[in-house]
Length: 216
Ligand SMILES: [Ca+2]
Ligand SMILES: [Ca+2]
Ligand SMILES: [Ca+2]
Ligand SMILES: [Ca+2]
Image (cartoon, rainbow, N blue to C red):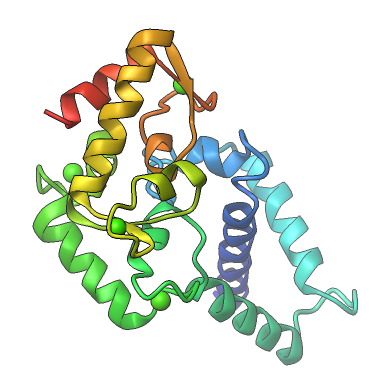
């Protein structure tokens, strides 16, 4: 039982590493497993064969067991705990970027509570407890988005470093007309990423239909 707990913790660390590298390594196991792209892997999503599981467990044990004596000692356990704590608070995925409202790179407990409340009351439109692709897309209506790129900066009309609903709407309107004219457009903003459903960094005219729908 005790051993199992450590394997589980190790597994969580493995997932955290995967999240960290998700952007850099498109098509990782994590990305594939996170089917609804909500930054978390549910039991339902994380289905793999037993051989694969055993392989991962062995790798995790090897990683944790720094002095290679085949035993996970207290020191090694403490390091794992530290690492989990560290990684848990860092901004890693799409919702954490939005939840980090004071922009310090960390989602505090207060910010997490506020995000959960916002999700429940506004973002999870059908109230099923999960954020589907459409609900994720529409987040800009309920939560401000940080200005990260030159394009986003252009639409930050009040110059406060964030895109509010009306600013995003204007941006998406203009992006949509570019796509109507050129047939497609490169993904230049965090917000557009949610519309790039095949993840090829381009919004094509089919994907642009969702933009059209959302800016109505
Ligand atoms: Ca924060
Ligand atoms: Ca939902
Ligand atoms: Ca603004
Ligand atoms: Ca695309």
